Length: 168
Ligand code: SF4
Ligand code: SF4
Image 1 (cartoon, protein in one colour):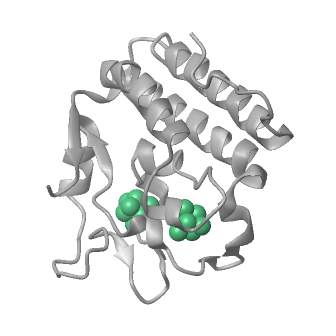
Image 2: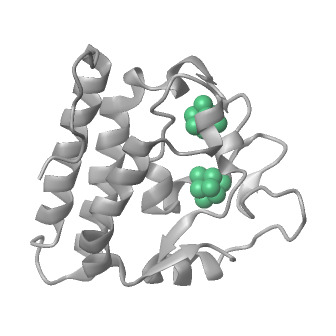
């Protein structure tokens, strides 16, 4: 099944991103077959997510916003990150901020970057602004929403039940 029905007039970046989304879905399904060792499966899954990020980055709005020290605003982290059961348990063990800024409890407000980058959830790893304006940093566009919805049942087989936004 194609995740993104390409409309007439889709540009080269749209096509590249759509192809990478298809590859991502195939690789997520492969990770279900990465043996019976759940750690190995999760590790494979996160590598797949990071690989997707490195391939689509040049075709995202983020490319113009992210410098050597990260994104200048970190607006997309003004949220509760989507997590699955396994990830929720991991995040529960980590120190976090308790405040009313609206930012994710793991966002480093001083450095404006993720304070748990190495163990951030799958959803954060694949989240990029795939549209053309900053509005979509906090409001995932249809392509992003469709991608996550399509991946969710496969992710649940490895990461456990979808648990919604962390801390919600
Ligand atoms: S989605 Fe927006 S806020 Fe998040 S990293 Fe990309 S440009 Fe920065
Ligand atoms: S876990 Fe990290 S990347 Fe994800 S929303 Fe929180 S600060 Fe941002």
